[in-house]
Image 1 (spheres, helix red, strand yellow):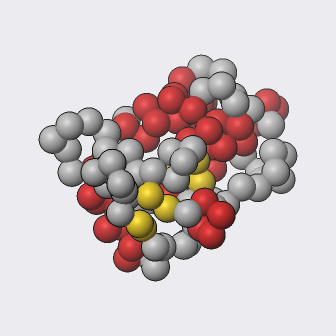
Image 2: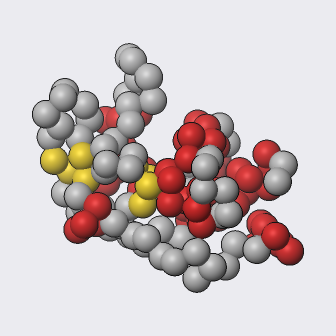
Length: 126
């Protein structure tokens, strides 16, 4: 799968995450058939075109532990993600390690089965 197809598939899956739900980078990777590429999902979000920020609810993707990823020292992305989740009504708990917060995956998680959602970007690969 080339990077353009990978990014399009990632964005398409993330658009399907329901309001007040989150999923993990790893589960997005699994849904698009690339289960060992969770870090690449994060990179795809890092390169999300500016105009698509409102169309792709990037804030609904968290780490495998439910932690909000800061995306580097000195950035405000973790705080922005926390605020966006809280604005949707998702409860974000303070992190013990001083991070930007953690979401209970048992309460707020969205983990559909592989093959249960359509991903047009994958075409025949789906």
